[in-house]
Length: 114
Image (cartoon, rainbow, N blue to C red; front, side, top):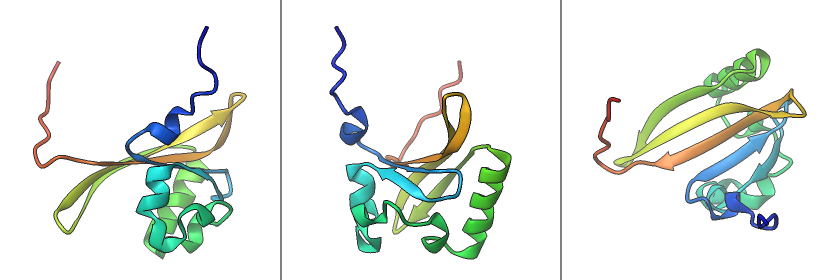
């Protein structure tokens, strides 16, 4: 019998955040709370993504929400590279918002062609 009480996202080592179709943050895991601690951490739940980002990023968020599509990119700050993956999530088959996963990358990331 599967363990239905295990909350894997809390144990996932990368930051995960979830917003609804209006861009309101509805969930973040512990690594996301730590990553965004200086911006409110856990208190970001219920906040709008649009108050957390500059306008160029807000335009991208509006586009992703409107087109119900994802976006993936690398970012680097102070020598730390991160992979940012934003993707739609669905509830009962209907678009319900976006998830964002931020993964800190090691210095060398091999590409494996298969």
